[in-house]
Image (cartoon, rainbow, N blue to C red):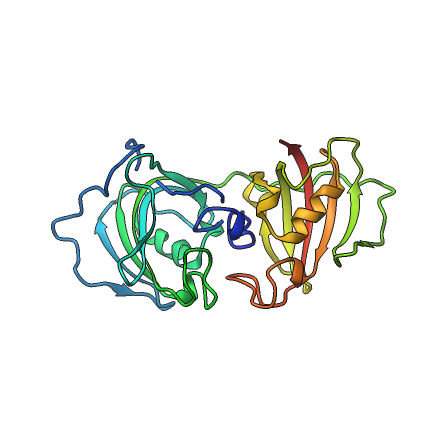
Length: 281
């Protein structure tokens, strides 16, 4: 989600969005290195209007993904210094799948330039990566370099709608000691998670102005993640509702992405969510 995207990039993969450590080669589940490039592959990069630089290392006439598609890839990434920070290649490595609208902007744009079966090299400026603040092993204002092989493209599932709300659901929010605001939209006697649990949810998130920034409903796919690996407002809030229930959260910036924000989330943003708790593991 943008939770596997930018909303909770901290709890998902390096590109966003999960706790899975690496990305992906089609039939080659344990590829040790990138496949062959075209003999006439360009030496120079092309720059897009956004500042992204790319070069197609292996052409393909097959389908190119849209930002709403899910892609399966093999890749490796490195910094300007040449230091590799992530790779799906090598022993134990395997491809990864993710929705293109749930990763850093440079990947969302860049992967639409290559066809299935092709290979692309990307040079992503920090504005299209992890911004001025960086993230995890990514330093502040870091330019990111990637070799990516596009193994498969899957159209998105049909969008879904949130389930029913209780007729007597409260209109007012309750505020916790931390400043989190919540209201239970659908009660449940099901199991409530602890911070140590992994949960499966459907959700959508929006800003104070009503602009939606992420939604598993729109992707037609639920999301699963460990509760101790997300923003503080989610870790606390999801422990207030039982399995099968629905909760609305109003998360102040100090329980979300703080004063700096992150790509897709402006600084000091209050975040609003509807979340259905589907399963507790």
